[in-house]
Length: 112
Length: 112
Length: 144
Length: 144
Ligand SMILES: Nc1ncnc2c1ncn2[C@@H]1O[C@H](COP(=O)(O)OP(=O)(O)O)[C@@H](O)[C@H]1O
Ligand SMILES: Nc1ncnc2c1ncn2[C@@H]1O[C@H](COP(=O)(O)OP(=O)(O)O)[C@@H](O)[C@H]1O
Image (cartoon, rainbow over all chains, first blue to last red; front, side, top):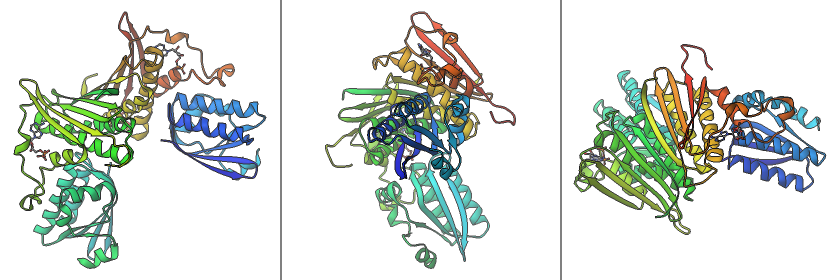
């Protein structure tokens, strides 16, 4: 199961994700958490992917869905520290060209 | 795969085991490590089970085999911090009545 | 038990494949509603039955398969493990917890199976092999 | 490919069971000699083929099974994933990496399958369903 911890850094909501973002589990958690944030008017969202081990196509699809939903609300979803398989998957799908992605948290926070 | 880290505390060899002690993998690692120690004349062995998640009957059997081998060489195999499933398994098999088992490492080291 | 969802697995008699069934059993027990610890108990029982089927039933002959069915239902978890062997008398195995047996390096599989699930049935079908059936029931509240 | 060891799995068309096949594929790939990262690649390819079989092939009908064979051989890892559906033309799927498609929330499964194994074959057998065959070869040194 994927875990999702929530922190607030000024205006930015940071979701620390851990585990795998996969069909029927992680993708659902991700969708629900981002929905909650957007419903609460928090539309600047940083997804910390450091501890995410892998995603499948359903998880990747949900990442894109979150990106679009935040943008519709005038906000943004950005990524922190994708690594290993997750980094490979973002490259492979060319989503690295869609998402603003950061290695350094303070830099990521400043970017919003 | 089970991992086994070796430390020496005076005369006692401490094996820090992590993972599962199961058939064809962890049991083989355990056997090989204890064999090496006994061959090197190190017959006071403390198995730190803290990070062992579970064992199967093959792993438990190997634990007993190690106990007997050390005793034959005039030494001893003792246990540190079995927890969760491992603790349950030692109770269930009544091996808690065979193995000297400790919660505190310094106490365990003094016991040899 | 009405199965809500199920998995069938056939493995070659190779101890390296025991983990495959263990992992599958853990997942199916989770789907059946068991929390992590109880799902591990169910998986350990299945694991021991599979080890016995591979070793004693099929004599580790890779040409002989072990056939496993895993089911998640509203009442709980059910597994059957079938080998191609000549069967055995499960009542005849010595008690590994008896004082004189505690230092034996084998003979604890059946004990673990019986401890970790609620019902265990052994069936032998002439010319077909031994089948072990394991059932772990969901309780309204308590954890087993 | 001569199989050294093999596993057959049949799952009900239930996305919660995809993990069962994923875990089994990872283990069989390890037995075939792949290190952790490559075994995960192989498992991800199998995972996507199984998701497609469950969703598109069998329409998530729990009465229809997805049949998987996993093999470890000296040359590497091989998997077949078969559904009961009407098949499809794998060449017709749009490229999810094309600029206009990058914000689509679906359509990346075939891309992942092709990226993570060395050979992919699609076969349709009239009245039987679609079968996807995946092969990942062991290399003497390099990691894929
Ligand atoms: N599937 C089986 N086919 C034949 N004999 C079996 C089978 N399962 C168990 N047995 C017999 O029962 C005995 C006890 O089994 P078990 O408690 O699992 O311990 P172990 O396998 O370590 O000997 C075995 O030694 C074997 O003789
Ligand atoms: N096993 C299958 N049976 C029928 N159609 C399939 C199958 N696998 C894939 N397809 C078709 O190919 C398309 C692309 O598949 P894929 O790249 O995995 O993306 P997605 O499943 O997210 O749509 C699917 O939308 C579906 O129309």
